[in-house]
Length: 252
Image (tube, rainbow, N blue to C red):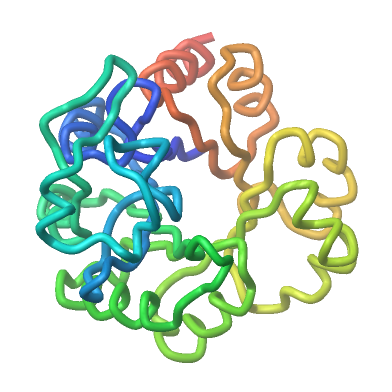
């Protein structure tokens, strides 16, 4: 059965990557939650998607310049405007998610504003996940295969997932070349829905459906289509909608 993943803490419903969103998404009973990681100025692991503050907060500038004081000073911006939260720490998010038995978490290792993937972020993330004893419930993911190799070599107990879209796959030499080079690097490949639709036969000839994820689906027709195709993982900004559609499909 397809696993529904709440993207950035269900950002269509609540503020993206917010503690509010993570708390609320648990009430939906989803089986998996995805979020994004960057380093702050003091080496803190922060949960935020962009390498800059401008889009999702009241602040500006690079996330890596964010001090602990300024982290509390900026406010997150949600679908309905500003909320009374700053940029959360990974530890604050794990305090919410870790106690939920069986919940899978999908932290993404992000690049900074210069496109640099900092190995310090990987080490700090792995250390914290180990401290919360989340090895068996975590799938670490990234677009960057170098990051995934580092995780494989230094923290092999964690499952790994690579994310790809058309631009990225073309820069890696195309679908066939990219998949052939993966070897044992990943368990799951998460593919942008446009690319997966166009290259479905080529991709599924090399990876079984249960090792494929599709992102990010918010349209009811698209969600229905990919559920019927039996893809292993479906990432959405609106897990409530996806769950409703899945329930209807299972009852049909």
